[in-house]
Image (tube, rainbow, N blue to C red):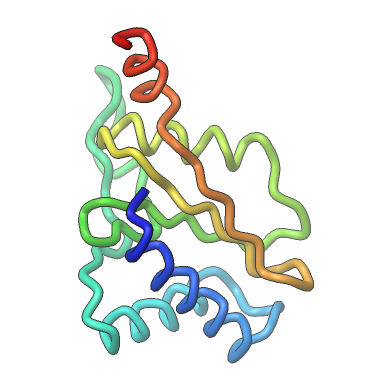
Length: 130
């Protein structure tokens, strides 16, 4: 899914960790990624505000770190270990904007971790229609 785009994004992610190392904060990685996306003419929205998901929720409560080419969500982490909560966060984001793919990225471990997360709700619905 979005093979060429995600290949470029992954290259930029690895390049960023190689340059900055493991111990920066999320905003610093975000700044570096934004610069590299600009250099590679990749369209993105940073700190993209998701629509309200239920009645009474405050506007602007949920923001994705990057929405790339209006196709792929990138959620950045700088944690020793990613958890199920990180996965579920990406699932909520995908469902909220009705997209297919998120990349959950963790810069803290010794080696960069990039997890592809599919919108299970959309794919489960497609399976049922086959």
